[in-house]
Amino acid sequence: MPRAAITGWGRYVPPAVLTNHELATVVDTSHEWIVTRSGIEERRVSHVSNADMATAAGSEALAAAGVDPSELDHVIVATCTADRQIPAMACYVQTRLGALRAAAVDINAGCSGFLYGLDLADGLIAAGRAARILVVGSEKITPYIDLEERTTAVLFGDAAGAVVVEPATGDEGILSINVGANGALADALTAEGAGTEFIGDDARLRIVMDGREVFRNAVSQMPQAALLAIKEAGLQVDDVDLVIPHQANQRIIDAVAKRLELPAERVYSNIARYGNTSAASIPVALAEAVELGRVHPGDELVFAAFGAGFTWGAAAVRWGPRVEPVATSDLAYPPPDRSALELLVDLHRRERG
Ligand code: UT7
Picture: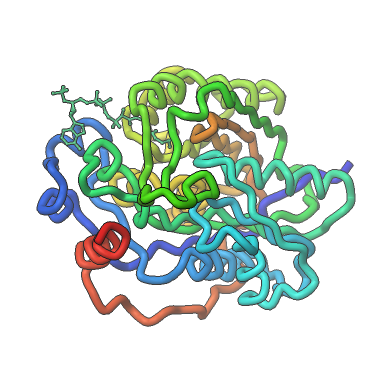
């Protein structure tokens, strides 16, 4: 059975930066509260569509792998904030990349979506049914921010990350992967305003979350999933060079490190700069970690996520010999014509009048 390996990595983080101080001019909050309770200092607000962000991240991952878009068998996009309900956002990404032979599908598993996508890619490669798969995690979540709801307004940001998955040629690759869900707690983290349930309703786009319930479940489920992935990979916790957890809250990331008994420097965190970017957070963090030299040939990595559903997942991945991209993408968008704060306030006005 061929093992699936990550051969390309890429990310798109929108250029417009929104600091806590700026956010505190339109939301009843403060920089101190946000940093203390979540570790977030700033986030990005996208001036391009979710599909544009996904395409840019995908293009960078393909270039890093040295794979031509026409060689892709599947484009899998994990998102819970698709530009449209129909068709799948992956179809826009497929055509913009020129991945003309590829099947295209979206999956929605909230913040765990990237790991659900990686699980599908792993299965397709193991079954010999595909040889080159692009897995993207991409979220334009800022339109869901309700400036009147301070508990959620401070947490989220926009971004996209992507990986290329191919059959391994050596002993690298996805050593184990597990995903799970508990739909009994579905209402603890949901979005109103999008979906047929809201037809005829004047419900606006907004995230509705029982933060404490999410927190409680995340700090137990993420380490459990990570420990299972480590065990099923035949590894010990001490073998793990770097854990790349979903970036939801620095306190959750710290709890994962504590539960795994790993020092903070072996658990990657960039939440201070991007906030919670949902399904994008792990592939963005991975691409950044590789760029920053935090991932070395042969490193044992662990990814772990938790999110709406509730859903969760974890993977143990042995990195391959290459930490340099084969090439870089030249896809670029014109810069935003407004500040991040103006983009956010404009979204809020258009959505809420
Ligand atoms: O990816 C999965 C998605 N979501 C998550 O993972 C989120 C998980 N949950 C969390 O990260 C945390 O629960 C939050 C960061 C959302 C909230 O932190 P908390 O420590 O659980 O705060 P809390 O909701 O218990 O609120 C504590 C206090 C309250 O005031 P009182 O009742 O003690 O007077 C809130 O009204 O903090 C107040 N508060 C705020 N104050 C200033 C809540 N949000 C804010 C805010 N600014 N933004």
